Image 1: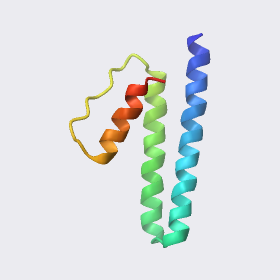
Image 2: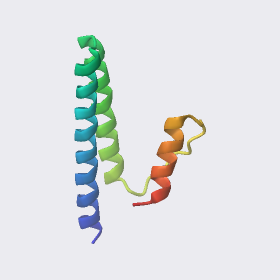
Image 3: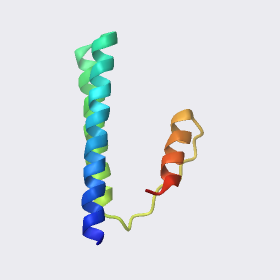
Image 4: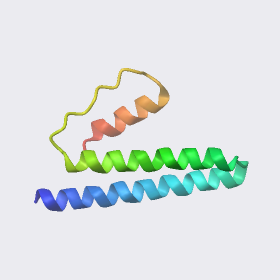
Length: 84
């Protein structure tokens, strides 16, 4: 059962990163962006995807505590609390 959950979670993570990349592309097109900046942003997204997938494979690793209280942090905390 754990293998099935991990596979489903991996698929959801992949789909989410695809959506984020497409949203960023739309923003880049709508508002224009320097090519170097776009490359840096997408590189960061790629790094984040790689780290997320590694952590998914190591499910026993404890989650780090978020100490900042920005809007992004509040949103991430809300997503984390849903426990899906």
